[in-house]
Image (cartoon, rainbow, N blue to C red):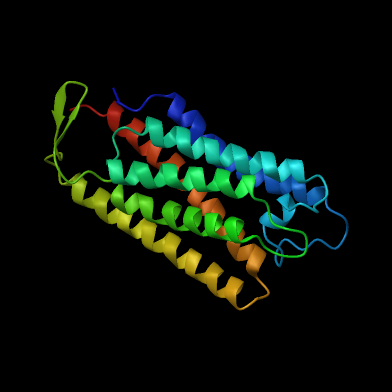
Length: 209
């Protein structure tokens, strides 16, 4: 049986639901002319946005879900769990400091940057490199060679997330036409990775041996 509590599955599944559900409902509440390809997620929770509470709740739920998943994903290395929690905390900070009408907030932008980077890097640091105690036993790399595959998979996931984040950064700093689209791509991917990690941990716990 996996050491990961099943409530972690609920928090991990809640992250993309809060994020994508939030922006879907918030976009529908905006006046005609809102462009999700060009405009950011933060614009939906900005101080001057219509029905800004929808995206505010979505982002707050996202941050809380990441914090809860970091707490429950006990099979991950502390460094990875810490970065996942940092991403959740930074998300809550940007909620507390929304985007200003007609422009950005320095605290909001910094918090968003910390959240994006932390949530992109955490998978690479989440795979334990040494044996560690788990439920009174010693957890070691399995003899079937799956541990190296898990590490390479985690590195590949982080590389993909950093690639998406880099694309968004280029759009953001050059005032590109796809700022909103690229932000939604990287945000959705980062919200889905903890769910994949929890599902993998639960599946591993059900395997014999």
